[in-house]
Length: 559
Image (cartoon, one colour):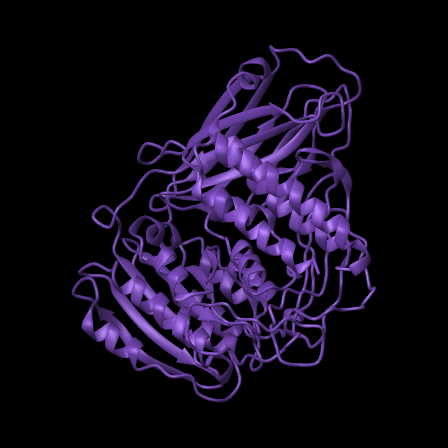
């Protein structure tokens, strides 16, 4: 492990463009078919604070995803902001507006185009199965009566909401495909959904934990952000077991170790809770790099191959001091001689750099969660199943290969990235009690006949998180069989995508009052589809919540 420590110390040499004052607006769009009919894919990049920006900078990209400077600022300046915090917390947020991020497209999407003579195999990524901050940030803004002027990462909506896929057998994954007709004879004629589910796990069957809490106590964390930070730690404490090791590091411009490799005695360990309850937010800036570096070195010092080794970063993501080197994080997460030190990033603030936290957790091979209330903290970390999904790993380096019949191609992908080259798509980790969901629109190239006997194959390759032994699971289904057996999981996936895509399409209209009538019509159409899907599933609670959010969002655009 000495070479890792040396790498960590020497790696701090670059001030990434992630932390630069100001931000550039990327504008990517691709015309295609919407999920329930023809329309626009609606991807757009914007400087995503709560201000109305007039920047017209654009980058020319070839992917179909969007990246944006996603500050979640609800502030008190004189811009056209809606300053309404609807948290269940009793404090008032006092975060300041800090536009400190830049937009960088890193997706590796490949436009395979249409060729009636070629059989394409695509490699798919939906990010780690528990990266899911985007829908919670959107919900926060909607409930605050604000525009969703933040990056909508569609795949995180599929990660966040619950699917009822059959769990896999221990040591395996379960691969399921669904197909349905969307627009007969038109662009995007079929929707295909692939679910890759993991085994179930409980606290009684999991590995011991080596957790290092890296806690932001800078001035911007005062008030509700610190309340939520403590709520996250308290919820985690309730699921710790005898023998888990925990360390606590707090930081602003200075870094202090509050608890060093403490072995807990079980749930709600009194020593751990005493330290957490005594934490206060001071003044000063936010040296995110130093806080992370110290946490990784501490996790390394108590590293064990028999444990899950993880840094839990809780912050508002506003780095105002020090430097951040993604190389350091990626090295600790991916060292070839160990199982790695994983990262869970939890955002709790409002003057908030969503893009930075997303990039940091991508490099750290781990979960990215946004906690907007103490209730959300309990849901994400107090519930045993979700607690393990956010902190454990069931399968490493999961990559899905999708082989379509000759002449078929992906027209619109709703994941993070896809490519016809396996090396261009980074494998991701799958948590226990969880499912990776891949959703895409596919079509035939030209007026080719649809043969019911044509086969669609999905193969998931992965590694055991302890032995690192590679494995794979494959499912092959005919087009005809899939079209007569669409499951409830796809019905739910379609509705979730409909919601996320509607939020993205509204962003392309730039929140211009002249477009409000159009926006309201889009929301009404999406809500009707979501309610129909919910009813067909026997009143699905997640879809009912989404329908309610759409109704609330409608009010933003009506006088």
